[in-house]
Image 1 (cartoon, protein in one colour):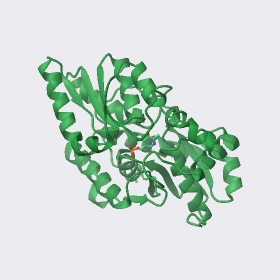
Image 2 (image 1 turned 60 degrees about the vertical axis):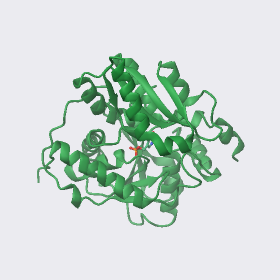
Image 3 (image 1 turned 30 degrees about the horizontal axis):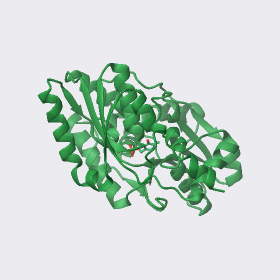
Image 4 (image 1 turned 180 degrees about the horizontal axis):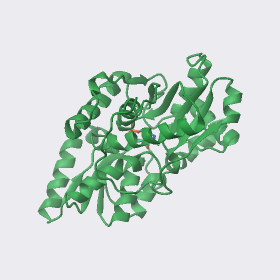
Length: 336
Ligand SMILES: *Cc1c(COP(=O)(O)O)cnc(C)c1O
Protein backbone atom coordinates (compact mmCIF):
# COMPACT_ATOMS: atom_id res chain seq x y z
CA UNK A 1 0.00 0.00 0.00
CA UNK A 2 1.32 3.44 -0.91
CA UNK A 3 1.51 5.85 2.01
CA UNK A 4 -0.74 8.87 1.53
CA UNK A 5 1.26 11.69 0.04
CA UNK A 6 1.85 14.73 2.20
CA UNK A 7 3.04 17.97 0.72
CA UNK A 8 5.67 19.62 2.87
CA UNK A 9 5.49 23.40 3.14
CA UNK A 10 8.47 25.61 2.39
CA UNK A 11 11.54 24.80 4.50
CA UNK A 12 15.06 26.13 4.93
CA UNK A 13 18.01 23.72 4.70
CA UNK A 14 19.47 24.43 8.17
CA UNK A 15 19.98 20.92 9.60
CA UNK A 16 22.51 18.32 8.47
CA UNK A 17 20.12 15.68 7.16
CA UNK A 18 19.52 12.81 7.00
CA UNK A 19 20.99 11.88 10.38
CA UNK A 20 22.38 8.34 10.79
CA UNK A 21 20.58 5.44 12.46
CA UNK A 22 23.14 3.38 14.38
CA UNK A 23 22.92 0.19 16.46
CA UNK A 24 24.19 0.34 20.05
CA UNK A 25 25.61 -3.19 20.20
CA UNK A 26 27.45 -3.04 23.52
CA UNK A 27 24.78 -1.40 25.67
CA UNK A 28 22.09 -3.59 24.08
CA UNK A 29 24.07 -6.72 24.98
CA UNK A 30 24.63 -5.44 28.52
CA UNK A 31 20.93 -4.80 29.01
CA UNK A 32 20.05 -8.20 27.58
CA UNK A 33 16.93 -6.95 25.81
CA UNK A 34 16.16 -5.79 22.28
CA UNK A 35 18.82 -4.30 20.02
CA UNK A 36 18.67 -0.54 20.56
CA UNK A 37 19.20 1.73 17.57
CA UNK A 38 19.84 5.43 17.94
CA UNK A 39 18.69 8.07 15.47
CA UNK A 40 21.49 10.60 15.73
CA UNK A 41 19.60 13.89 15.86
CA UNK A 42 22.43 15.09 18.08
CA UNK A 43 24.24 15.39 14.73
CA UNK A 44 21.88 17.86 13.04
CA UNK A 45 24.59 20.50 13.49
CA UNK A 46 27.34 21.73 15.82
CA UNK A 47 26.20 24.84 17.72
CA UNK A 48 22.83 24.37 15.99
CA UNK A 49 22.44 20.79 17.17
CA UNK A 50 19.50 18.72 18.37
CA UNK A 51 15.84 18.32 17.58
CA UNK A 52 14.83 22.00 17.48
CA UNK A 53 16.74 22.56 14.24
CA UNK A 54 14.39 20.23 12.36
CA UNK A 55 11.36 22.21 13.53
CA UNK A 56 13.00 25.58 12.97
CA UNK A 57 13.61 24.74 9.30
CA UNK A 58 9.85 25.16 8.84
CA UNK A 59 9.21 27.82 11.48
CA UNK A 60 11.91 30.12 10.13
CA UNK A 61 10.81 29.62 6.52
CA UNK A 62 7.42 30.98 7.58
CA UNK A 63 9.02 33.87 9.46
CA UNK A 64 11.10 34.86 6.43
CA UNK A 65 8.12 34.54 4.09
CA UNK A 66 6.27 36.96 6.39
CA UNK A 67 9.14 39.46 6.12
CA UNK A 68 10.26 39.07 9.73
CA UNK A 69 13.54 40.64 10.85
CA UNK A 70 13.24 39.81 14.56
CA UNK A 71 12.59 36.47 16.27
CA UNK A 72 11.10 36.38 19.75
CA UNK A 73 11.01 33.11 21.63
CA UNK A 74 11.08 31.77 25.17
CA UNK A 75 12.24 28.94 27.40
CA UNK A 76 14.35 28.01 30.41
CA UNK A 77 17.74 29.61 31.03
CA UNK A 78 19.39 26.50 29.50
CA UNK A 79 16.83 26.06 26.72
CA UNK A 80 18.21 24.17 23.71
CA UNK A 81 15.43 25.68 21.63
CA UNK A 82 16.44 29.25 22.53
CA UNK A 83 20.11 28.52 21.81
CA UNK A 84 19.23 26.95 18.43
CA UNK A 85 17.04 29.95 17.58
CA UNK A 86 19.86 32.36 18.50
CA UNK A 87 22.40 30.47 16.37
CA UNK A 88 20.10 30.08 13.36
CA UNK A 89 18.86 33.67 13.67
CA UNK A 90 22.47 34.86 13.49
CA UNK A 91 23.05 32.63 10.47
CA UNK A 92 20.04 34.19 8.71
CA UNK A 93 20.85 37.76 9.70
CA UNK A 94 17.83 38.13 11.99
CA UNK A 95 17.66 39.83 15.38
CA UNK A 96 16.81 37.36 18.17
CA UNK A 97 15.26 38.18 21.54
CA UNK A 98 15.04 35.41 24.13
CA UNK A 99 12.65 35.53 27.10
CA UNK A 100 14.26 33.23 29.63
CA UNK A 101 12.95 31.65 32.81
CA UNK A 102 15.35 31.61 35.75
CA UNK A 103 15.99 28.10 37.06
CA UNK A 104 16.96 28.18 40.76
CA UNK A 105 20.67 28.86 41.18
CA UNK A 106 21.81 28.02 37.64
CA UNK A 107 22.63 31.64 36.95
CA UNK A 108 26.16 31.51 35.62
CA UNK A 109 26.83 32.05 31.95
CA UNK A 110 27.52 28.64 30.48
CA UNK A 111 26.09 25.98 28.19
CA UNK A 112 23.16 27.08 26.04
CA UNK A 113 22.96 30.54 27.65
CA UNK A 114 26.61 31.20 26.80
CA UNK A 115 26.04 30.26 23.15
CA UNK A 116 22.90 32.40 22.91
CA UNK A 117 24.82 35.42 24.19
CA UNK A 118 27.76 34.61 21.91
CA UNK A 119 25.41 34.62 18.91
CA UNK A 120 24.29 38.11 19.88
CA UNK A 121 20.79 37.36 21.12
CA UNK A 122 19.15 39.95 23.33
CA UNK A 123 18.18 38.26 26.57
CA UNK A 124 15.52 39.14 29.14
CA UNK A 125 15.44 37.04 32.29
CA UNK A 126 12.37 36.53 34.45
CA UNK A 127 11.75 34.73 37.72
CA UNK A 128 10.08 31.37 37.33
CA UNK A 129 6.73 32.46 38.88
CA UNK A 130 6.59 35.66 36.84
CA UNK A 131 7.41 33.82 33.60
CA UNK A 132 4.83 31.14 34.33
CA UNK A 133 2.09 33.69 35.05
CA UNK A 134 2.86 36.16 32.27
CA UNK A 135 4.51 34.49 29.29
CA UNK A 136 1.68 35.33 26.88
CA UNK A 137 1.78 39.01 27.91
CA UNK A 138 5.58 39.05 27.65
CA UNK A 139 5.41 37.72 24.09
CA UNK A 140 2.74 40.28 23.20
CA UNK A 141 4.40 43.29 24.81
CA UNK A 142 7.83 42.56 23.31
CA UNK A 143 6.16 42.08 19.94
CA UNK A 144 4.49 45.48 20.25
CA UNK A 145 7.74 47.12 21.31
CA UNK A 146 9.52 45.84 18.19
CA UNK A 147 6.61 46.90 15.97
CA UNK A 148 6.73 50.39 17.49
CA UNK A 149 10.46 50.54 16.61
CA UNK A 150 9.62 49.75 12.98
CA UNK A 151 10.82 46.14 13.14
CA UNK A 152 8.88 43.07 11.96
CA UNK A 153 8.81 40.59 14.83
CA UNK A 154 7.94 36.89 14.58
CA UNK A 155 6.92 35.07 17.73
CA UNK A 156 7.96 31.42 18.07
CA UNK A 157 6.21 29.34 20.75
CA UNK A 158 8.19 27.44 23.38
CA UNK A 159 10.13 24.63 21.70
CA UNK A 160 8.82 25.73 18.27
CA UNK A 161 6.05 23.26 19.08
CA UNK A 162 2.99 24.16 17.04
CA UNK A 163 1.35 23.07 13.81
CA UNK A 164 4.30 24.32 11.76
CA UNK A 165 7.02 22.80 13.94
CA UNK A 166 5.25 19.42 13.66
CA UNK A 167 6.68 19.11 10.12
CA UNK A 168 10.20 18.74 11.51
CA UNK A 169 9.54 15.30 12.92
CA UNK A 170 7.29 14.23 10.07
CA UNK A 171 10.46 14.73 8.05
CA UNK A 172 12.35 12.59 10.57
CA UNK A 173 9.71 9.84 10.23
CA UNK A 174 10.27 9.86 6.46
CA UNK A 175 14.00 9.33 7.12
CA UNK A 176 13.21 6.52 9.57
CA UNK A 177 11.15 4.69 6.95
CA UNK A 178 14.22 4.67 4.69
CA UNK A 179 16.52 3.79 7.64
CA UNK A 180 14.37 0.79 8.62
CA UNK A 181 14.32 -0.47 5.04
CA UNK A 182 18.11 -0.07 4.71
CA UNK A 183 18.76 -1.88 8.02
CA UNK A 184 16.01 -4.40 7.29
CA UNK A 185 14.34 -3.95 10.68
CA UNK A 186 10.77 -3.64 11.98
CA UNK A 187 11.26 -1.94 15.36
CA UNK A 188 8.84 -2.58 18.21
CA UNK A 189 8.80 1.05 19.36
CA UNK A 190 10.30 4.49 18.86
CA UNK A 191 11.27 6.19 22.14
CA UNK A 192 12.24 9.81 22.75
CA UNK A 193 12.22 12.56 25.38
CA UNK A 194 9.12 14.75 25.29
CA UNK A 195 9.15 18.30 26.66
CA UNK A 196 7.00 20.72 24.68
CA UNK A 197 5.26 18.04 22.60
CA UNK A 198 6.22 18.99 19.03
CA UNK A 199 8.69 16.18 18.47
CA UNK A 200 6.12 13.66 19.65
CA UNK A 201 3.36 15.20 17.54
CA UNK A 202 5.55 15.03 14.42
CA UNK A 203 6.77 11.48 15.03
CA UNK A 204 3.24 10.29 15.83
CA UNK A 205 1.79 11.76 12.65
CA UNK A 206 4.83 10.71 10.62
CA UNK A 207 4.71 7.11 11.88
CA UNK A 208 1.17 6.93 10.53
CA UNK A 209 1.93 8.67 7.22
CA UNK A 210 4.99 6.52 6.47
CA UNK A 211 3.61 3.28 7.93
CA UNK A 212 6.41 2.78 10.46
CA UNK A 213 4.25 0.14 12.12
CA UNK A 214 5.19 0.76 15.74
CA UNK A 215 4.14 3.04 18.60
CA UNK A 216 5.94 6.29 19.37
CA UNK A 217 6.54 6.59 23.12
CA UNK A 218 7.37 9.98 24.58
CA UNK A 219 9.20 9.84 27.90
CA UNK A 220 8.03 12.90 29.83
CA UNK A 221 10.74 15.14 31.32
CA UNK A 222 8.54 17.73 33.07
CA UNK A 223 4.75 17.31 33.02
CA UNK A 224 2.50 14.26 33.41
CA UNK A 225 0.89 12.08 30.75
CA UNK A 226 -2.43 13.98 30.83
CA UNK A 227 -0.60 17.22 30.01
CA UNK A 228 1.20 15.65 27.05
CA UNK A 229 -1.93 13.98 25.69
CA UNK A 230 -3.52 17.44 25.52
CA UNK A 231 -0.45 19.27 24.24
CA UNK A 232 0.45 16.75 21.52
CA UNK A 233 -3.19 16.60 20.41
CA UNK A 234 -3.35 20.41 20.30
CA UNK A 235 -0.22 20.60 18.11
CA UNK A 236 -1.63 17.90 15.80
CA UNK A 237 -4.95 19.77 15.52
CA UNK A 238 -3.13 23.00 14.76
CA UNK A 239 -1.13 21.18 12.07
CA UNK A 240 -4.26 19.59 10.56
CA UNK A 241 -6.20 22.87 10.55
CA UNK A 242 -3.34 24.73 8.89
CA UNK A 243 -2.19 22.17 6.32
CA UNK A 244 -5.22 19.86 5.75
CA UNK A 245 -3.23 16.58 5.65
CA UNK A 246 -4.78 13.34 4.31
CA UNK A 247 -4.85 11.69 7.76
CA UNK A 248 -7.28 12.04 10.66
CA UNK A 249 -5.28 13.29 13.63
CA UNK A 250 -8.09 12.36 16.05
CA UNK A 251 -7.36 8.68 15.27
CA UNK A 252 -3.69 8.88 16.21
CA UNK A 253 -2.72 7.18 19.48
CA UNK A 254 -0.52 9.32 21.75
CA UNK A 255 1.64 7.26 24.08
CA UNK A 256 3.39 8.90 27.05
CA UNK A 257 5.54 7.33 29.77
CA UNK A 258 5.59 9.70 32.76
CA UNK A 259 7.34 7.56 35.34
CA UNK A 260 10.80 9.11 34.94
CA UNK A 261 10.28 12.84 35.49
CA UNK A 262 12.11 12.71 38.83
CA UNK A 263 12.29 15.98 40.77
CA UNK A 264 11.08 18.04 37.79
CA UNK A 265 12.22 19.87 34.67
CA UNK A 266 15.99 20.14 34.45
CA UNK A 267 16.53 18.16 37.63
CA UNK A 268 17.97 14.69 37.30
CA UNK A 269 18.70 12.19 40.03
CA UNK A 270 21.92 10.17 40.41
CA UNK A 271 20.38 7.31 38.41
CA UNK A 272 20.16 9.58 35.34
CA UNK A 273 23.77 10.73 35.71
CA UNK A 274 24.75 7.06 36.08
CA UNK A 275 22.99 6.31 32.77
CA UNK A 276 24.75 9.27 31.13
CA UNK A 277 28.15 8.00 32.34
CA UNK A 278 27.31 4.47 31.23
CA UNK A 279 26.41 5.50 27.67
CA UNK A 280 29.47 7.73 27.40
CA UNK A 281 31.77 4.92 28.60
CA UNK A 282 30.12 2.06 26.72
CA UNK A 283 29.21 3.69 23.42
CA UNK A 284 30.90 7.11 23.32
CA UNK A 285 27.41 8.58 23.14
CA UNK A 286 26.77 11.77 25.13
CA UNK A 287 23.29 12.25 26.61
CA UNK A 288 22.04 15.16 28.74
CA UNK A 289 20.38 15.29 32.17
CA UNK A 290 17.36 17.38 31.10
CA UNK A 291 16.04 15.30 28.19
CA UNK A 292 17.89 12.47 26.46
CA UNK A 293 19.51 11.04 29.61
CA UNK A 294 16.19 10.93 31.45
CA UNK A 295 14.50 9.30 28.47
CA UNK A 296 17.26 6.75 27.97
CA UNK A 297 17.21 5.96 31.67
CA UNK A 298 13.46 5.37 31.35
CA UNK A 299 14.10 3.10 28.38
CA UNK A 300 16.62 0.97 30.29
CA UNK A 301 14.24 0.66 33.25
CA UNK A 302 11.34 -0.34 31.00
CA UNK A 303 13.51 -2.99 29.33
CA UNK A 304 14.49 -4.29 32.76
CA UNK A 305 10.80 -4.41 33.76
CA UNK A 306 10.03 -6.58 30.71
CA UNK A 307 7.95 -4.05 28.78
CA UNK A 308 9.68 -4.95 25.51
CA UNK A 309 9.85 -8.72 25.97
CA UNK A 310 9.79 -10.38 22.55
CA UNK A 311 10.79 -7.19 20.72
CA UNK A 312 13.96 -7.52 18.62
CA UNK A 313 14.66 -3.89 17.76
CA UNK A 314 13.93 -0.53 19.43
CA UNK A 315 14.72 2.96 18.19
CA UNK A 316 15.80 5.78 20.50
CA UNK A 317 15.73 9.28 19.05
CA UNK A 318 18.77 11.17 20.37
CA UNK A 319 17.34 14.68 20.46
CA UNK A 320 20.63 16.36 21.47
CA UNK A 321 21.21 18.47 24.58
CA UNK A 322 24.99 18.31 25.09
CA UNK A 323 25.22 21.97 26.15
CA UNK A 324 22.72 21.34 28.94
CA UNK A 325 25.04 18.62 30.25
CA UNK A 326 28.00 21.01 30.23
CA UNK A 327 25.92 23.49 32.26
CA UNK A 328 25.44 20.81 34.95
CA UNK A 329 29.10 19.84 35.33
CA UNK A 330 28.87 20.23 39.13
CA UNK A 331 26.03 17.67 39.40
CA UNK A 332 27.90 15.27 37.13
CA UNK A 333 31.03 15.57 39.27
CA UNK A 334 29.15 15.05 42.53
CA UNK A 335 27.19 12.00 41.32
CA UNK A 336 28.87 8.62 41.90
C1 LIG B 1 13.38 20.29 23.39
C2 LIG B 1 14.11 18.99 23.58
C3 LIG B 1 13.40 17.78 23.66
C4 LIG B 1 11.91 17.70 23.66
O1 LIG B 1 11.35 18.01 22.43
P1 LIG B 1 9.89 18.67 22.38
O2 LIG B 1 9.58 18.76 20.96
O3 LIG B 1 10.03 20.01 23.06
O4 LIG B 1 8.97 17.80 23.15
C5 LIG B 1 14.12 16.61 23.78
N1 LIG B 1 15.45 16.63 23.84
C6 LIG B 1 16.17 17.77 23.78
C7 LIG B 1 17.65 17.69 23.89
C8 LIG B 1 15.50 18.99 23.64
O5 LIG B 1 16.22 20.12 23.58
